[in-house]
Image (cartoon, rainbow, N blue to C red):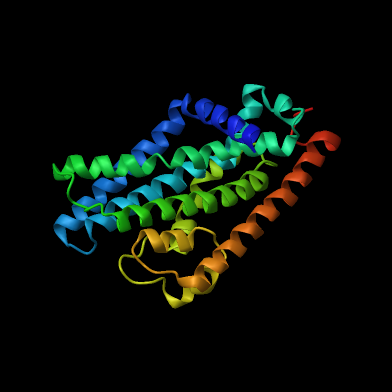
Length: 252
């Protein structure tokens, strides 16, 4: 586990060294916070707490979608062959690469908060008691876990096409709808309730947006996250077989 964390930390540093990835996170979080701030001032449909938190969620997932093309990006850099042949195993090595996108996406929360504070010229727009801090911490951590499981599946799904990075935008809106982040104070509509529970981002978003998932919701989230992680492992092994036997990934 310690080695995996060190590998992930290394790839996060590599991820941050690419201006495009930093721009995706920072610009998305800041612009969304600006739009939410204008909505609060104009209509008051959401609270400041919901506004900046929603901006953080959107920034995190927008960054996590970079996982769709991150392995192809490593191929372009010429490092994919070294990752596949790493002594720790190809799956662990590639998982660290993909984890960098979702992990760096956590920075969208402080960016969204700072943007809102700058626009409001105040740091008291969302009183941070212990209960509120605990909700944000648990919500962000579980959202990261869900985004990580989802991005691992996304990476293995799109790694078989050389144009994977072009499809990143297609992952944004469907996930935003299913996760419930685009809905203000109400719960997800009934026609989205069932499919949304198949996404490991929904329950953390409910918590961050001030809704109460309940014990049944958390149990379902654990099962859903585990299922997506197992699916990522199965798909990753299949992609690895294509890479080492058929040469589909052009890695070896």
